Amino acid sequence: MISRGDTIIIAAAAAVVVFTYLRFWVPPGATAERVVIRGTEIEQTYSLTNDNRVEIAGPLGKTVVEFRDGRVRVAESPCRRKLCVHRGWLERAGEMTFCLPNAVSVELVGDSYYDGITF
Amino acid sequence: MSPQTCYLRTLAIIAVVGAFAGCELREPQRFQFPAMGTLVSVSIYGAPEETASAAVRELESLLTELEHEWRPTGDGALGQANTALAEQARATIDDDLSLLIEDAMALSEQSGGLFDPSLGELIRLWGFDDSAVDDHVVPDETAIGNLLGDTSSLSLEENVLIATRSGVRIDLGAYAKGVALKRAVELLKAAGIPNAIVNMGGDLKGYGRAGDRPWRVGVRHPRDSGVLAGIELGNEESVVTSGDYERYFELDGKRYHHILDPRSGYPAADTISVTVIHEDAARADAAATALFVAGPESWPEVADALGITHVLFVGVDGTIQMTTPMSERVAFEETGEALDIKVREL
Image (tube, rainbow over all chains, first blue to last red; front, side, top):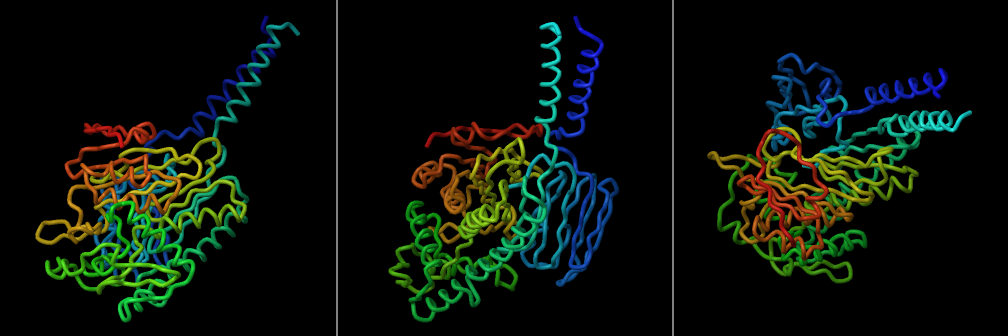
């Protein structure tokens, strides 16, 4: 025989399970929420929803960051090796590119499934 | 209380406790700083904030020092050794660098010379060293031929390096990050950090767990944006990838990447990426380069010689090859792309 108290406990337990699942479960491939661009003297946050081009000044010159179709990339860089440009489009939380010579980093921030990317 | 009521109450308590126990209530603390010629990321779980911050500051200091000591040019230990090798064909080095080069030479021998720490002059000729300033050009064929040799052109006895031919310059680029990862993990453990993963420019080593789950690493897709596959790291495991897609230049529509084949002196042609899992990050680092150079036919023999059991190999035609142990660890992302995957035994 289930008492009223038992019903309340079971309902509360079920509510806790549903709440914790919705609050803490991060599905693989979670999309990025915002873009953080860091330079020598700035740290700026952008939305991924608007197409845009942003110029960041660094020791070597201007790094151009391009936003398009919910993705972001370094489109132009004054550095020699262009590793930041070669990184291509970033689209998921946790992905980033950086230019050490021009001291600029571009990072997608959000609920990331992965703790790191090997490349 | 009836047995039925008691049973249901117990179930309810288990459900509540289980719900909390199964959740990641805290995210790892993340830190970033430039070192070793790249951006280093550290994720720490289960340590007080001040302990984690202090450990990361100590780590930054260590890696800055290692970068200086192991840079092929300049006044660090390796830079001085290379200057002495160029001028006198011999160099006296300290114990730490001696151990490092001895291990690198042993790995080179096990790889059949496909990982070669004495290729520094060839790397410089191609303009892939950090000190290069001019635009990239494809070097003259004769100049490349003059620099080809093997590790027998270098010997090490009681802290004295001897070059048996000209043009020997040591570059530990395909190995030093692995050693630095090992030392980074040792430092974090000694500093009382119970769980951490260190990402040094795409080479990672972790220990412990991120709460109730293992550390998760994505393998970057070598041609598209995003992740090709995911791997859950076991305790103390490292994962290293060598790819042709970041350090390269293009001339006349052709791509020239930085992973040079010591046999030809040109970029290895038949591979686009190799991912390796191993507890020894330095071995994994050297192995990823050696397997990349070995190519789609020969990589299993080289992996076997190096004691590497977990390999994910992507050929220039896009086909994927894996060892059986790797196939049991890797989870490919669902991208809608049809993957051509082959499992090979060592």
